[in-house]
Image (cartoon, rainbow, N blue to C red; front, side, top):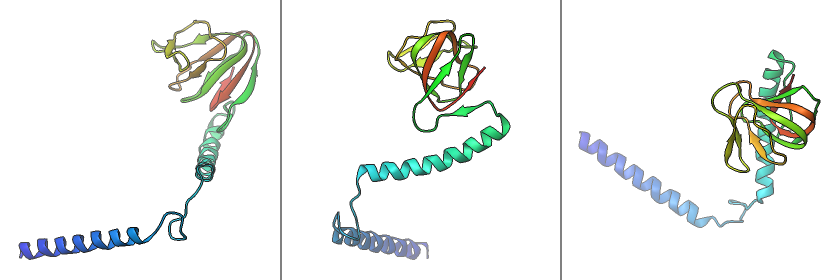
Length: 159
């Protein structure tokens, strides 16, 4: 009995595989059955989905903490005054464009400097025009010592 069931399953799978192969072999790339699309079209659709997701997640975040700001999927210029600190949330990307600042890192791990592949530790000077990524939301950021402009992508808070 078990052998008959196994043979039946094997015949079904073989038929399915052959039918699928014939169906794919008959459709040509660029035809109405299998249209070609531009990368920009796919990227645009992905960005639309990400915007919906971010707006949903962003509305949940803003309802619990009204100080959190977001720059969405693109870099946003942000001015931070002397004495203020810009804190990044998990995954936030920050580039110091002008001014000066020092890293604020509450733990042993630092802020990832993607430009040079190093880690920025607590109180280290932040170099201009280098891409920094905040790895997790635990109070990491940059304390401004001279009025500074940043490019920020992601969620951040200024205190």
